Image 1: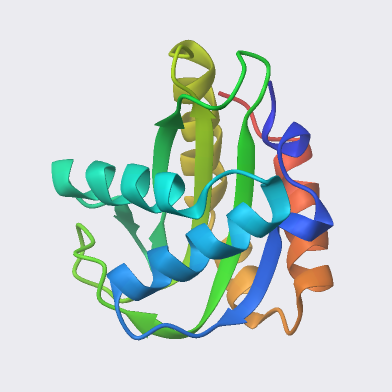
Image 2: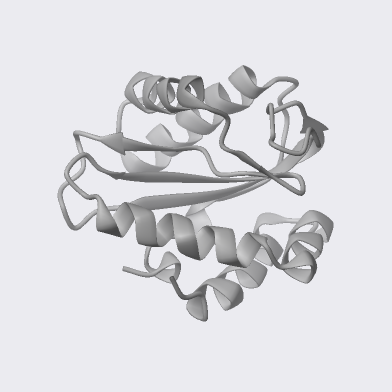
Length: 156
C-alpha cells in the first residue's frame, strides 16, 4: 500500500484553526468522522492514546498523529493531510511549533503496512522543499496536488 492509495482531495484540510494539540486532534477527529463515517470519539481517543506514548511531532513543523482502529478491515487505511492556520506546540522532538499534520489511521491487525506508510511519510516530510510547498499552499486543492505528486514517488 502506498500513500497515494490512502489520500483523496476530500481528505485534505487547509488552514484548520486550533490553538492546542488537543483541540487540533479533536477537530481532526471530527473532520475524519464526517468524511469516513467512523466514530469521532474513537478516532480522537486513539490519537490521544498514541500521543500519551510520545509525541508524534517529528520536527520541522510536522506531526504524524496515527493510531490503529478496530473498525477498519485489513485492506483499509486512511490518510488526512492537515495544514494549520498557525503553528502550535505539539511537544515535537525539535521543540518547533507544528503547522502540518498527516493523520494516519490503520487497521488494528496491520503491522507492516502501518510501518511502511509511516516510513514513506517520514521520507516525504524529510524533504525541505516538500514541507515548504505545503506550508505555502493556499487551499486544499493545492495541498492535495503537492502531496499526491510526492506520495506517488515515495518509497519505504
